Image (cartoon, rainbow, N blue to C red):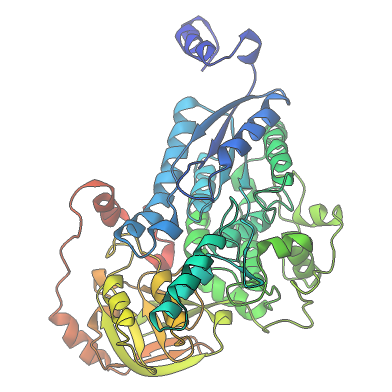
Length: 546
């Protein structure tokens, strides 16, 4: 890109952005962030990128900043715009890949905040396979309302409480004003914090960085060190696919299960693995979850938020307990150039206090992810088993063909205890975009129906969702999955211990119903959503566009 007389035009362009003669022989390192003013998750990321760039320049590299998009799930939730959220993961990965490919960068620092931007960035790193370090932008601090910690989860659930008269409009507005007090990603172990923890366990970020709050000066130090570390990876020839092995993905899944993390990890980790050339079946999640105790008492199902985990030592506390129990592959390489076990040996790690329990006294004996199968979900459905006291439910289906239909029914108090809410045609192709259902699930909780109804969908859930909610039901309705055959009143059975999701219909009856079924017409015929619907695959394989 910069050598020889024929590259004089290229160098001329680079001189215009500040490069000098002595810079042309140095490694060019891309520093990408998803910084924007759309959401507090990403508000500060361009500042972090400048620190990472400084880390590159002061260690004999050329740091070049660029940005990519990020969609705010919290703001687009329960609108048509939420269809863009999962699509943005692919756009983020594509745009980072293209920028680095076109500009011939030698390495990459990726900085991300909101949910889909984390896996999207790491997917690009896996595709490019150039020395790379990922940095999470950090968690928001919790707000304070009536003497207790609150997060965005509380605001969504308060809408349900307001709809039933359990909360006044004034109280709702007061909560709204204090729930998000700083920059940073949503405070509980929702999707962003889950994926940050998983990526640290995977080995793609520096140890201890996943839990640092966005307003803590340590995150700027981590940005600098991430920039410096890329040069060391380049010197030693360590690339993402050397780190992102099958065993490393098993480590990441184990941490998600032990912490009670988001079901979105079952979409994102297989997608990341796909880009790294690693086959990762969703059944692996269930296998690992069955052998992994749930030990982190984190919201939405537990008591604590990410800053509380940081105060007791962060993700390394969880990693050390799991490694000592023989539940992790300690020999996996990481971006430090050392193995996971070597990293942990060099750190001072506490006992986790009240936030992370010993494995001998877990919150639940098994992990937080369960994969259910049956005649409603031949390819599987996903439930966060630790987020509900109810593990078995049987009742009549209340079938809705969109999120909006279900939301309106809940607001009108048309859902009764004992019902199984079914929301279909919200899958990767059918949505398209596989919207999260936090507004719906939060109203269920807010109306006091959490343990009185169940919900299943071919869409997905926010990491803040709790209750007996089964998502990612595959095959989805739009491609003729059995969920498309359901009618109001059909008896649905959800059996988490036995991993079963079924309807009391014979195979013959399902077949007869589907003979009269026709695929719905595309909801979009132009633009990115139309392209996505044509390309995207099953949620059971990570909803990748491959």
